[in-house]
Length: 242
Image (cartoon, rainbow, N blue to C red; front, top):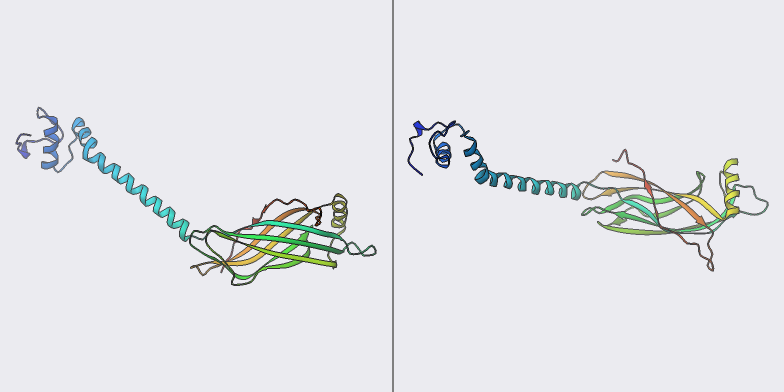
């Protein structure tokens, strides 16, 4: 590269000076950027292009870190599923009973899944489930006590049974007719409503847990067990928390 007088260099026009030398001299001597098209292209293809690539890599790394922090620190609601259920009995309590006196015998296994990477999910209130037929409650069973914890990336399965020989159930006339139809078919459409409250450590806010699990159960016996497929529960959106 030759020796150029900075005062003689026009940063907007390389003129007869070698383009590469012109650009170098422009960057060294001029306050304004060199606007010679070829010189600018040469500059971009070298040091400036490397800086742009480095900036894109840094941006991608920062975006990935932010995403990981959100996943790690923002609590995600637990998921629920019914892993197993068996209906041994569901019928009128006795031949002379009204349609609202029912006998039942059911066992369930409910799983609580904690998908958070680092935060345990603690039950801050008892976890229980209502067994419903056509919206009417047949039974309520306890699943977990307050203080029980589901570890990160783990699940806990809670087992419960409910049985009665003659339980009073508030069924309307439409529900009675539906019960008779399903009794004849031998397959019952039931719902399990799971209620509770959880907190995700280290957060102190408590989230109400309300989930509906829709079950289709055939009568099952020890000699002829009915098949059951795992049911995913619909967790209702929590609008509150405290």
